[in-house]
Length: 395
Image (cartoon, rainbow, N blue to C red):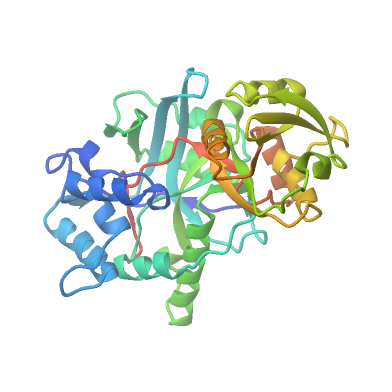
């Protein structure tokens, strides 16, 4: 079962910085304008390390490693005095405006080849160069942000209900409240480690960083290094439970279809289409009621009900993935948010959009236990974990 250990984290010194000003979203969701704003917000914002730029006399990776070492020397960052777990809670409102929270534990998770051990991938990943994150890991010798894993064990959520004020707190730019508690009590540490180790975990977000950590581990082993911190990766473990998760779908945009091709007709072999009239944001609710996907074209929409019946446990992405190869020549891209899809189709930036329903916790668990990966770009987990609450040194 997966080994999950406490570690002595590196954290921002609250006497030296305002935490709200130095944390950042994950590197892969930061656009150029937001990157510049974060850089200008504070000279010690984590984006200077996690998404660095070339600087006079040094490339971006060397600059990132130097900043990390300099901030430690200046006590902008400080290292906790003993190994700890870190309970991390995010408070937010879901898509329907209801207050929600996600609670989990940051620790060090033992690496294993996905699918060969008890760390399971949950969706296929698109090919992506590893050089950037690997070069950053080599220079900083640190895990800068946790991946997100889902525990199939019952009871982890209960261990995250802690009394007392948090050790760190901040609010991000979209209003999500982030709180962190440091856990050192031997009994609680042991209970958390045992809970995570009692069942497999599923990678929810961070497949690419996981693969990068495996590559770094293998490099260390090939260089003659014995067992060490490189054998584990910083991870945020959350119980796979409805009350802990908000999972949004990632929709499909379709381009490159030849003139005269009727997409409704092309899809009708696998889906029963129902005219849904002009597309509006209420379409998502109608999809849920009908148990259907939706096709959107300029000024028109259709509900698409799978012809293989309502008892099929597969997600919408799996239904669609199974038929895409048979469609006329086309290009796919991916977009989160119904309103974004409708706007892009209306502006003519996409010929059509296919709206998917969210993957359920039951569908995710069934796929994980069966060793089945969902199609790439199936799930969008919300909120996003902040980078900068805790780092983990590898040497």
